[in-house]
Structures are given as C-alpha cells and as structure tokens.
Length: 560
Image (cartoon, rainbow, N blue to C red; front, top):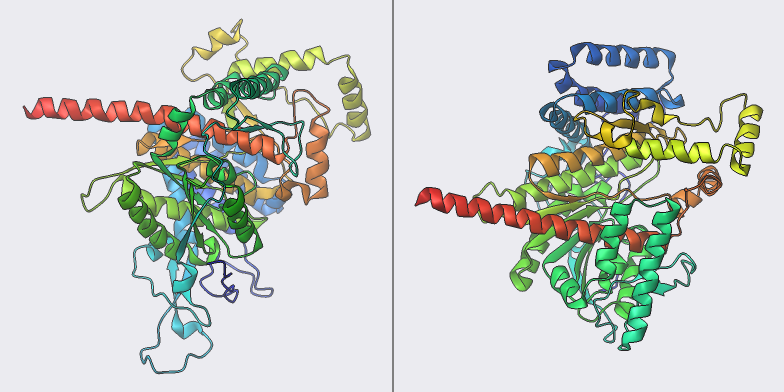
C-alpha cells in the first residue's frame, strides 16, 4: 500500500498549451492567455459594444508594444473586471462560461493507443501512436489504461487508510494560535474530558478571532463563520462531517484542510496527489495522528498528465463511498498550485475535473438521482475584484489616521527614493460616489461597487488568469447551476510557494509595517480557513436543502 508509483516520462499524457516556440520547444503561453480573456469578453458585446471594442484596441496596442508580460496585462484585467461588473447578471455569467469553455478547448492531452497486435513489442511512443484531444473531449472517450513503461491502472488505484489515533474521538475543531509555530503548533482547543480545559480553549480561540477582527485583518463576517464552528457542539460537528465526502485536488496543499478534517471523527477525505514523499508524509501522519474513525482515500496521480483518468477514477471512488457510507454531499476543493505557466494548466485540468464530476453527480444526464455537489476554493487577494464601499472608506480612515505616524514617514521616504513609483496610496475610496454622505447610503444603490486591483506584476499574467478562472467557476456554479459554493479569500501566508521567492517573501513580510496587514503562518491560516469553509458549506447547504424541499412540495401540490 505504501509503494510509490514511478513517474511517467515527461511527454506521456501531458496536458499542453496549443502553441510552442519552434526553436526552443517551450510553450508559448501569451497568445492563448490573451485569447481566453478575449473569448470571455465577447458576451458583453451585446450590451457594451463600445467598451468591448475599446478593450480589444487596448489589447492590440499592448501586443504591439510587447508590454503584456511587463505589466501590460494589469490594466486590461482591471478593465475586464470593471466591464463584467457593470453588465447584467445574465451577461456576466455568460462571460464566465465563455472563458472557461474556451480554456478547456485550448488545453490538449495526448492519448496513447494500444498496438493493434497485443503480442507486438511496444516501441518508444511516436506521433503515429498518439491522439491529441482537447481536454474536454478526452473525458468523453473511453480512455485506454495503458502507457509506455508505466502501469496506468496501478497508478490510479484508490487506496484507503484509517487513522491511527483512537484517543482522537472529540469533534471539537481546533484553531492554531499565531503564538505557536508551524513546527510546534499551539492548538486553541482541547480533546480533554475536563470541561474547564475545553471551556478555556474555546474562550482562547474566540478571543483570537476577536483580536484579528479588532485589528482589522479579518472581516467580521469571517469571524462569525469561524466562531460558529469553533464553538459548535461536537455532536453537531460530527453529524455535519458525516454527511460529506471531501474530494481534495492537491490533497497535500499546505493551505488545504486535509489534516484538520482528518482529526475529526467521521471525516472521509478523497485526495488526489502526485506520488512522492509529500503524499507519503500525509499518509504517515494520518496513520499516527488522524482519528481512528476518519478515512483517507488516496489517488496517486498527476493532474497535468492524467486529468481525464483522474475524473473517471474519482467518479468510481465517490460512488463506492456513497454506497457504503450514504453521504449526501460531495465537496470538491481544487487546491493544487504550480509556479509559472504550469499553474494555468493545472487550473484548467482541475476545472475540467470539476466540470466532469458536476455532470456525473449534480445533474446526471442519464436521469439518475442527483447528488448535491458543492465547491470550495481559497481565493486570492492578489487578483482584481469588487469590494463594498464601506471597506474603501475604512481604508481611507486608516490612511488618514496614519498620516503622521512612522508608517507615513517610511512611505514618504520610499516614494521619494523611487521617484514616486512605490508605495503610492491606492486611493480606492475615490471610487465611492461623492454624492453619498456615508457608506450606508452608497451601498443601497444596486450598481454601487468599488473595484480593487490587487494584481502583482511579480506573479505574472498566468497567475492572474488562473485565479480569475477559479472565480468564474465559482460564479457559474453558484448562480447558474444552483450549487453550494464556499470561496473565502485567504490572507497572505508563509507557504513554500511564497517564501521560496525572496522577493515575494520580502514583500509579504513588509506588508506588516502597514496595519492592518498580517502575514500569517500556515497552521493558523489553514485551520482558520477550514473552519470558515465548513460553516459556509453547512449554512448554504441548509438553505439549499430547504429550497429544494419547498420546490418538491410545490411540485406535489401542482401534481395534485
């Protein structure tokens, strides 16, 4: 069970960009990246033709100047989001669908064919033995379980493990304190039978949430979600967990909820991750520290090389779990992250899996009973999105309060040294209507919003596209497919993907000189985000279930 499967050769079943450099062989991502944005923009032409034309003209100018990768994409993405926020909801959703569908048609996987003669010795794979398919089509064909020098069937075998800690029987959720460390976390919860210990731990956890909210690095709504889980009755938490099966694409993600969920009795996590030491480390940890009443099912596979195979294997595994455990809610959480252009590819691969599983379970084309499929994402603050006007005015208040403090002096010095290029105030509060005397008046206007541009050119256009595509999927799922979606925004965190870049780490650490920014350690942040996601899924589920029951009752009345 612990055997690590070998990696296939790089060219086997790899999902690729449609264009590559003829001289270097490396993928050309910019034309496809731009084409996805352009395809997503087209539905807006019906309502804002002039704005669409102006955007396309600006894109052509950026291409002519060769400025796209040097930050030229930033104003284009901002203008795209501004336009999407001002069209009708129907058109806004059509823009999301158009972008996602076009992206899936532009990502190709190679399907290798069996020799016609089974006794024929397999030679090195060449172009005559492979079939190139858009990833969307690859899910709809019967995939051959074979590759050269690599047993595909073995690699996609789901292996289940049981936790090894019989003493972990309490369903009390634990929050990691920021006063601990990722190596030695300080948990603000207790599995003790001593009531005083539990009460003290719960009070400390609630106090930490309040401290974050008072400082301003966390919204009050996020505090309410997390506090509801931290103070919930353990029996209610266990009952809630037992209704769900969690499908984590990239189960070893530092920010992901796997380890927090697997401490809870009754949890069942189906995880997809590449075979290797990180996957084995998770399995070893679970067999020692996970609840003996929790289950971890691991699918050792590569999202970039085996997306369609993973989709089919997950569908089979989910059906098996549902037959044995009668779980009613499937929670799919794409978590995998890769540097550079691979991040776009893995995002498209995960989205194709989400799309496939949604068709299989949420609206089954064969008319079988549909399961409730929910989505969960950890969205990024370094994208472009709308915020409430009162948040912009709060930023203005904080900026004015710090006008004479040490932060202001530091900002002025840096601005002077950079000739006005660095640490300019965002002044997003200027977008709030000047005719409104307060945020409360302004937020009552139906089309009132403030657009915040959090894009960082260091991360590049592929990161911006990947994270925006996840937002598109959230909107389509929630408003077009009536699915439960939890997509809280995660704060800056000291994950390996951030700190391995000296520039990213320095910038994130420097944020903390400007209140209320906080650069979180991994354990406090991941435990906090897990609590928020759990409550968002549960509260939305109860609302969705009530709505479905009302619809069924109305249908019965109509039939009578």
